[in-house]
Length: 259
Ligand SMILES: Cc1cc2nc3c(=O)[nH]c(=O)nc-3n(C[C@H](O)[C@H](O)[C@H](O)COP(=O)(O)OP(=O)(O)OC[C@H]3O[C@@H](n4cnc5c(N)ncnc54)[C@H](O)[C@@H]3O)c2cc1C
Image (cartoon, rainbow, N blue to C red):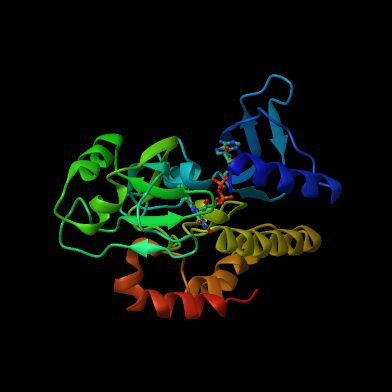
């Protein structure tokens, strides 16, 4: 599913539920008063700052990068280490079936962790560390993966960054009046992101109602996360074998995730 459609639908539902949304307004830095965050300075002259009793930080994967908030506020260098990649929509990948996902486990560093996600109408999603690596794998003749992508061509390429430790929460999840949710908390995946945000909002509401937004109250978010299904069952597909033992076990356990 293309992000631009998914995001628009979420935005539509959020506004109908009472949220306010401002496009082209980037949070640049946090406003601190007495060591407590009370909002954010933005890039917009129309809305230069936003004040809040509790700030929820949800800047996604960017949070772990040099310009991100998790990296500067809560994550250790090791926890936030990232690597770049490109995702492609390939046409004409041979011998794949929509709905049957293929993941390649091998000692070969270039091939290791590669996967094929066949969709309808001859489209297969696959990601690579770079376009050059895709070209090299496409021209190799010594493995099954290359045989399959050999005749294919990309019709869409997007770039992304991912954390080496993808899917695993940071050790700190709230600080100075800010609650970190989604990829900004270290978790990965749409389900995990939404559930973490649900807990974040629950705790923020509780803190605002009690009139105490210090760590005594918002620290409860860390307890909720560490005792949750999303913590016990991380979306960490680059570490499935080492964490779960098998893909089957990962899928079975993921079915049990509850809010
Ligand atoms: C190639 C790829 C394939 C994936 N496939 C799957 C999949 O099949 N299933 C699955 O569950 N997950 C998948 N994921 C992971 C999933 O997309 C993420 O885990 C999820 O989108 C995280 O949600 P989020 O809200 O935390 O962050 P995001 O969805 O990244 O949203 C963060 C938002 O914050 C905005 N933002 C960033 N910085 C600022 C700022 N300073 N001020 C204001 N706004 C800011 C961004 O523009 C963005 O709109 C995939 C990820 C990638 C990269």
